[in-house]
Length: 276
Image (cartoon, rainbow, N blue to C red; front, side, top):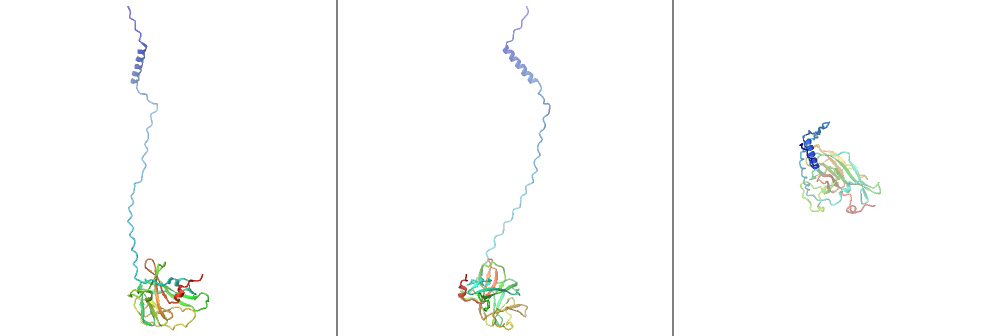
């Protein structure tokens, strides 16, 4: 009698079919794409300049110490007014007149004297430097009447450059500082001439002078006098008297100019206010 096949249950048939498919999938080789994938090109690294280290700068030098001021007496009046063109002092005004010939100083020291009195020789203590320095006269003129007589107010020797920080009295070399303004060092003039000269070779003794110019309404110009030792002195006609000299000093304690004040104004005129 022939054997008949048993019918497989549907659930078992589904499981067997799934297992067969999974087995076939594992055994099948992996699918290849039609086009191979392009390799990704790596970008070359950017070229960077090598870092350079700057050498460290040296520290700046320390500031110089403040200049040591000399033991000098401060000026008791505003001497700078004598240098200002048109400055009104009392009823007078200042006129400035430059001299054509400079004062030659080789030794850095300036001296003042009465040319006819060798003992009046005064060497100033502050060095002025060497060179040919321009000179000018400060002349006091009547502010209203131009024909009125003039007065010599000051002789000015420019030895440096402004600005001016202060004014001091010009002391004689080796002289002690005076205690008050009443004891100002002064140069005595008895012959009517005041000479200014390079002090390098000392006093030349008596200096021969031409005749004093006749009195006029105008201030007479200085006279240049060659000395036997090669120096040149400049003699200024002035009234007889005793005159003080002043230094204009800058902020670095260097001289800017030397002013010989011929006392052309009274204390009342110095204090008087200029008219508006």
